[in-house]
Structure formats: structure tokens, C-alpha cells
Image: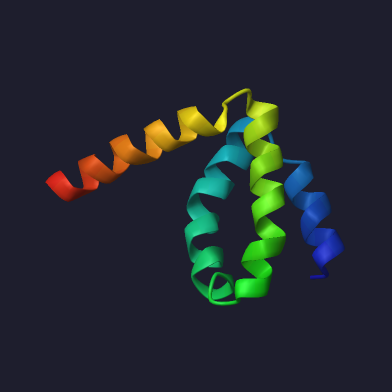
Length: 75
């Protein structure tokens, strides 16, 4: 299956299916690609764009990350 066919299929999913797909596959996809520093520099602006569109600011993200980091340490 070509990347374009995969993209078309994914964009055809419902909102709930897209959310489930992202949560299920992103960690697995990231394991491999985060080892490339150049790719992370390409990904960062995309993530910032997503953050901006969501209405959450960077300060809120840092607070959330701090909270989640504390929860993981407690487990």
C-alpha cells in the first residue's frame, strides 16, 4: 500500500477512529524515528502547529507535562 493510499484511508476515518489510531500507533512510530535528530527538528514545528490550533499555549503544555511527569514518578 502506498503512503498516499494510507493517507487517503486514514483521512476517511471518523474522528473517534482517528483519535484511536493516533493513540495506538504514534508511540510505536515514534520509537524508530525519534532516533534521527534531523527528523525531530522537522517534527517540532508540526507539533507546535497542532498545539497552536488546539488553543493550548506552551505554558499549559509545560504544566501538563510537569503533572504527567509527576504521575509517572509516583507509579
